[in-house]
Length: 338
Image 1 (cartoon, helix red, strand yellow):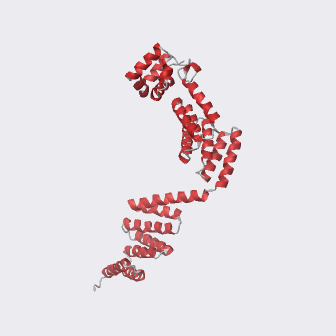
Image 2 (cartoon, one colour):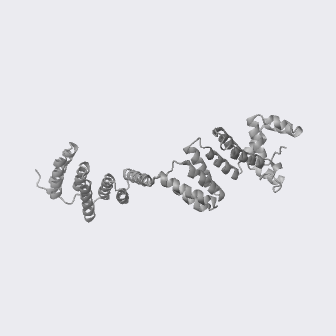
Image 3 (cartoon, one colour):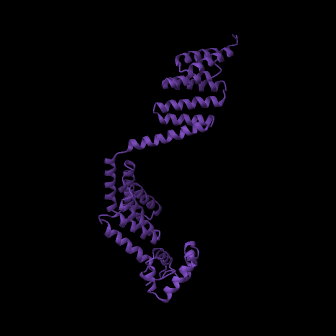
């Protein structure tokens, strides 16, 4: 046997590793402690001991040994990878203790010493778990309903920002209820925050594909964006979902608005008196879809027929694809149909 304490320490470490692999944890601890007594300049003896304590689910002691390893490692200028490993193991132990804030802190410290994909993934997983815990702790359908009702009261007073705040609180309390998303979408539209309104309308449909009001909200957003044909298509979907006809009147009103907006003769927003024909054509020239329709030989022939015989338009509108193209031209202000 060697008389060199460092070599003797390494021999003890090997015996400890062998016992560890055989899950003979108490024996492994004895060898690692002996190795540290022989050579306290090698912190792997401490990190290995911490690994045993972790397997024994003795997490507080595991943390203490790792902290000792980090402190000693800094004193002797140990390899930063060894210090990073000790810090990561502290994070692992805190995860087991369900102290996610501490785990996140020590994973971060580990990454500053040595960045590894494993530690980075543990950090991300723990941050995600913390968010899920916070969300679950905040979940309360009863308080969600109270917040939504408070939002409704503020909505009636036209206090849109305050109503949005309450609807947002309702969503945080219960993010599976479509109603606060629907109500918040209306508020956003009142404030012309179209993008936010669209996100809420789409969320309604995602959560409940049969929620008719979700489609009505989406159609309103599309109308605000002057996507009249898309708005009409969405309202048709709403009609198909409205089995008991409870929303039929509201849907029809929105349909009438969309059709009126598409027809220049009814004073629609596009192609009306405020925009010259030159401006209309200039805008249309920048729209690839409009150019595609105008360059289609079949559509060219149909448009010629409609010009010669205005009544021909009604016949062509019976074909859904042609009707869709004609509506897009009307929407762009290129075509006017009486």
